[in-house]
Image (cartoon, rainbow, N blue to C red; front, side):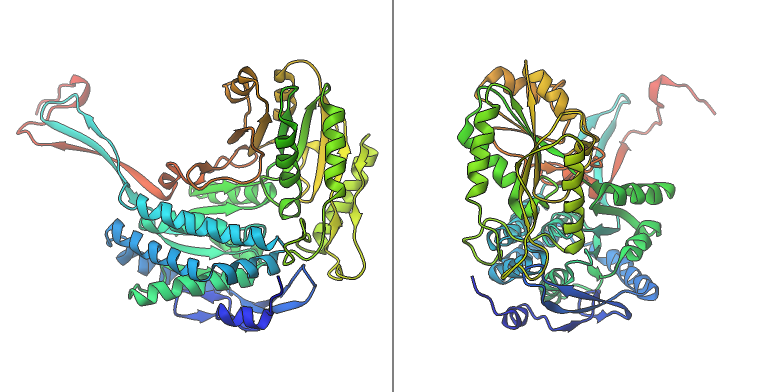
Length: 512
């Protein structure tokens, strides 16, 4: 696919110089500018101004004022706003998908898929807007009724990462809005133009419905802006997606003020391949999981834990598959893999390659940076596969790159599960098997310790209907489907006495 970048920006209402702070119709930004460069070709996309501390405070005050009115709007009416937003996204799907691909570096198909995730969560949230219900309970006291209900929290802060520059924001805001909250978004400084495009789309919807400024706010900037969100007690909930190190910092700061936080952090995901696995399905799941988004998904497949009886067959199939991969511009749909996000990511990748060799790893498919015509951005690398011992220390960390580790195991599936679980992270996991006993053991209380556990599909990718998130150093938060909406609300238990007396619980007597 060939795109004209100026035309693309024009279609999304974007310019070469943009203000990066917005409360809706109002745009500002006097902080240090961010220069956005595409990892596809290394060319500049544009310049975006960032938020000053004063602008942060002004934006937050605007959001607080908007919340006073927005929370009074009936939830189905808030759902109608989200429905209209989803329709706007349908109109802009191709353009926004292309921008995601160009600014972040994922394939155009993945860019379209990310926008489709936005549309899907909008559809989910519209239905949810009529199902924000609690429970009714029987009281031990006569002529009393008990129930519980959920109320909006207030201002929800959202910190998102570069790898899903639009979808993660939408997972949060679609639910937060129907729950009656207002939102302030601090996007990745590596993908500012994606955030501008989204803010302009939702601003149209809010303006058309005469919704006050402050319901959807944008704060472009660096780590300092994230720090302001974490420190301010007026932020009722901070949802943060990114590295484990970032999450620990957020948890310490927000927890220090007894605030609420929702963390979606690093993954170190494994596929277990048993003797009874369908090897064709295994190959598809492992390859896409390892190289999709150039290995920069939190759900990317990092480890392949293979039974010794099928180890050689799996390795040979992987070598053949990797030999067929095409690397280049993600806008060319014939290519399987695009670039890493920036040269810094390439440096981290090359450091990991060296560590593998020093820790006893043997290369099945050798990696390294790619240079030459078509790779001028300096962000392209070869996907690599290494056979490595299960006790290698590098397996304890997540390398955000197309680097796959293959580990051999023997004996029962419990041995493979023990290897899988022996890392600090706990996001996504998968098992490839046609054996019902192995599958159910993997899903049991003593099976996978991850927030996501799949059978006969890979680790990468998640459907909107299920709650998304992980355990251990992944942070424990849940976004998207199921009852994840409850994280965006405060819970209240109510007891109503419709008698003429005031009996106490537990039969306590208190007479005056």
